[in-house]
Image (cartoon, rainbow, N blue to C red; front, side, top):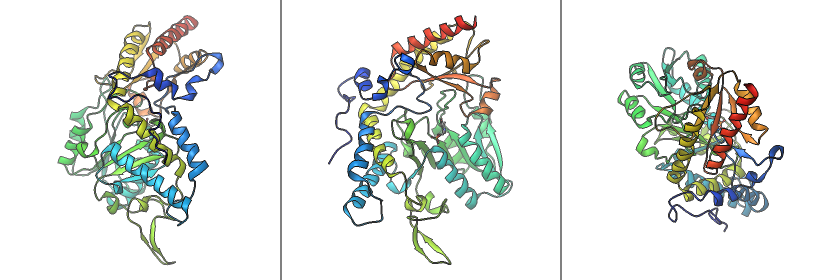
Length: 421
Ligand SMILES: Cc1ncc(COP(=O)(O)O)c(C=O)c1O
């Protein structure tokens, strides 16, 4: 049997710092030369690059293991089912869920949140009930609740964000009321880098009997997660932001939540018996995995989880912090730069604007130097409105980035300044 941990970089047990050169060697794409320049990839918050171990697992799946899951007794069907379930085990371990029945595979974070909004909304939300989100949410943690509110007559309330980019927790506590049916907030902001005090948020909400969904899209790649310690009811995240393939996301639901929610989609694999008149449903997780999933991506996702575990999220976090501190100090001292999001304890995201230069122009000039950053509203328009800017430029860091790349970013921004005067 192949294991995804073959040829992994040196583990955290042998080194106190990341061996970044060794890690970089695992990422074939880092060797490309866009526009003739070495690639400097500072857009991991949008999607991370993939190590060879994940690419190999995907290729191996299609070359040696491909079959449909749960449907056959033949060798390949059994093998694919086993591989698929191994990833569920890996996810359970990665987030410290108490059972694999608490882990449902979706396409991404967006689909996981839509699932909760649709099913929870149908079962528990009535006209006049309230859902609390925050002003720093990604659109994928706003729009599904709006769709649900249109169907149910619920009302959406948003926790304000302070000048440095923190959630206003006093305001949050005062928004929690007798009509509050759910709190849905992000763990880490993709636009600001703010790491929210999720344990405190959960305990404030639970004290009022209100369940909490955490958007973990930017947390799972960077922060060790223990759902039992945090106590959240739901957690959503995406494989593609944490070294995994696109097409696979996770919805964790604590305890018996999946038993209490109606199915999201109907179809094959989610049933127990079907007659023309009625259907009885399978137990979770199958109940929420209708149809053939992206089996290959789920299987390869295990290699991503094992890679992160092997390197160690604490070591990754320390490395990102070192890059962020350097970038923050140097970029903020450039003339006309305004940082958006300066909360203490931030994750590796640097959002900024430059006087007189549109963020898209910043990104375009950097791109000519092989530097990939993101410019725009980052799917957080309410947050951009809060900070009075329609868009920011955003550099985001991950385990394969280096201090030299931070220097290249700074030189690139100096060039932007020269061009725009
Ligand atoms: C905080 C946050 N939530 C949700 C999403 C949506 O993730 P996906 O597009 O993988 O569903 C993103 C993606 O950028 C994000 O950063």
